[in-house]
Image 1 (cartoon, rainbow, N blue to C red):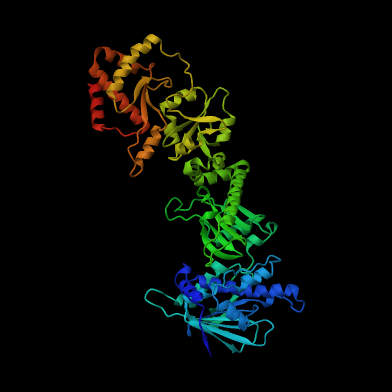
Image 2 (image 1 turned 135 degrees about the vertical axis):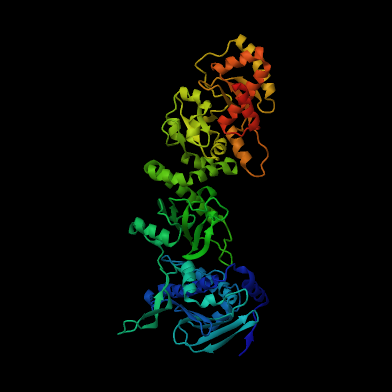
Length: 625
C-alpha cells in the first residue's frame, strides 16, 4: 500500500489549519457534521433528476459514536459516499471542495442548500486526532475505499469492505497533555452540547447512543446500565416556520432555550427577507437590562447562522451600539465566509442585513411607543439611556434615527413625554424647548432658575441622566425649535416686570462691577436677574458648557478641570439687594462678606462643592453676631 504525499501547498495549508485557522477545537465536529449533511443533500439533488432514485428523508441520518475505551470518535452518514477519485480529489488536495463543485452544477432548490464551500473543514479533525480514517462507499459503486492519514506527512487509499452507501470517519483522539484535555471529545454530554450549539438545525437527524440507568425488570431497587439511541438536534429551526404556525409562547420558549435572558421579552420581530440578500431572523427586545450591560464584559451581537449552522455566537456587526440590547439570531445563505467559516470574508451582504435589521428594530420600537405605551416605557426604563448614548456618540451621526424614540420627564405631567409631544403642546409665543438638569426631579423643582419659565406656563423637560444634556447638544434643534437650558444666560423670555431704569442700571453697574472683581476667577459677571421671582440669587451660564455638564465632566477620571462660564444673578426685588446697596455705600467689608455668602449660597443650590467650607461657616457666624 503506497503512501501518498499531499501537494506542497496542501501540506503547508494543513499545518496551518491544524495550528492557527480555527480558534476553537470544538469546531471540528461542526465541520464534519456539515460535510455529512452535504453528502445527504447530494443524494436529494440527484433524486430530483434521476427517476431511479427515491429520496425517503426518514432513511437518512448522521450518527456520532464515542468509544472511550479505544479513544475513537466516529461520525457516520448515509450520504452519497465517495469513490477512490473523490477521496483523491477532495481529501488529497486541500481546499478543493467537492461540495462547492456540486453546488455549481446543481443550483439549490426547495430550500436546500449545500453547506460546504472550501473543502478545508474536514482537516480540522487533525486538531483533536492523531489518525483520521475515512471509509466510504459511493452511490452506485460496488467497491468501498479507506482513506487514512496521520496529518501532514501524507495519506493512504486502499479498497475495503463496507455494506452500505455512505461515509464513516473515525478519529483516533489524541492523548491528554498537561495543557490540553482531549477526553472532552469522548464525553457524551460534551458532544451533545457541541452538537446542540452548532448543528441543532442541520436538516437530518443527528443520532447518538446515550447511556442511562434504569430499574431492572422485576426489581424494586436494583438498577442496570443501558444505552438508548437519541436524536440530538431539533432539525427544523423556528425561524423557517410560517409565522402563522407560531404562538407568542413559541417565541418565548425559543428566547429562553437560547439563553438570551431570564426575563420575558417585551417584543419579538420575525423577519423573512427575500431580496438583494436572503435571510431569516428572530429578534427580541428584552424587558430587563442584563446585570453587566454597561460593563466591559458585555458583548453585543446576534447569533449568526449559515444555512442553519452556527458560525458566530456574537456577530457585533449586525447591531449598531445603540441597539446593542437586542437579542436574537440571523440565518442566511447569502454570506461569504472565510475558509474557517468562523468569520465573514466580505461584508457587503452583512451590511445589507444590518441596515435592514436596524430599520426593523426602529419600526418595532415606534409601534410600541404609539400602540403599547406602557410596554415602551418599561423598555425605556431599562434601555433609554442607551438610546441617548447613541444620539451622543459619533458626533450625533445617528440622531435622526433615534430622536423620535427619546423620552424625558416633564414639569407639567411629571411623567415621560416624547419631544414630539412636547412640541405639539407648546404655546405659540414659546420660542424654545426648555430643559433643566439635576440629580432628581425633586431637586430640579426647587431650582431658582425655573421660576420665570414656570410662571410663563412653559413646560420644562427634566434631565436627570448624566448623558441627557450631552445628547441634546448633539440634536441642537427638533422640528426647528432650539433647546434652551433654564440656566442659560438668555432665556428668550421678557420678564413681566419692567427692566431697571437707565439711572438704576448706572447705579447698579458700579455695585455689580465691584462684586464681579471680588469674585474674579469664580464668575465672569454679576448682574441683575430677569428670571428670579422669590429667590435672592442664582447662577446662570454663558457658553456651551452648563453647570451640570461641568459637574459630570469633572467627575470623570483624567479629565481636565472643565469650568462653565458662570454668572451670579441677583434678584433686585429681594430684600437682600437692599442690603447689598446699603453696604456698598456704607460698609465695603460687609459687602465683601455678603458677596462671598451669596456666591456660596448659589454654589450650594447647584450642588457644587464649596471651595472653603470652613470660611463659609465663619462667614455665617460673622452675620450672627
